[in-house]
Length: 201
Image 1 (tube, rainbow, N blue to C red):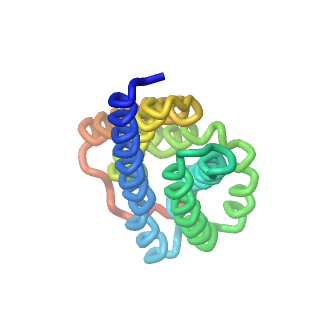
Image 2: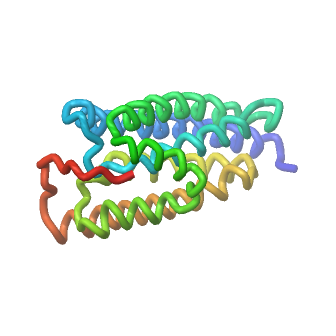
Image 3: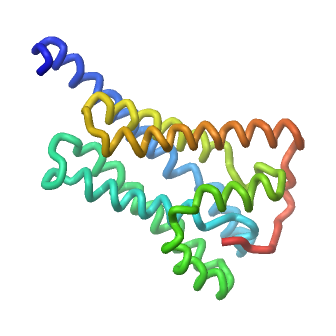
């Protein structure tokens, strides 16, 4: 049991980390908007992957359930931000499926089962394979890292392993994404801006 003074400081710090996490998360949720403007403009999903949005939706729904007061008291910030996130991901997925080919639409449903392999598949298909960072936007990678880092701190200060363990992993994966972005953007120069019409799920 912490002394009252330390408990008060810890509470303020955890609330601050939670609010920061919410702000960075909202930044993460809106960061794909330019991507979907491009998809709508070109009427094609090109080589953009739908996997990150499937993963994000499932992640938001699970965290929304976990953050509900009836399940986990005193972490309402987790529930609020993930309800917003789930709403955004549903919109993104609706747009993606609307402009994807028939085979991709069916494949997207099947990929829900394989959600555990999303990160590795996305990195292989869209960054390492193409040696380009065009389809791994920097803002998305940075926002993912900052959100995970903030909620990792929030979970540590709340002594809640169900928050800090996955977000600790997310922080590490976010660093990997940023490292990949830095490597490929510096090693292979500017990205091509020509539309690529071969769609990848």
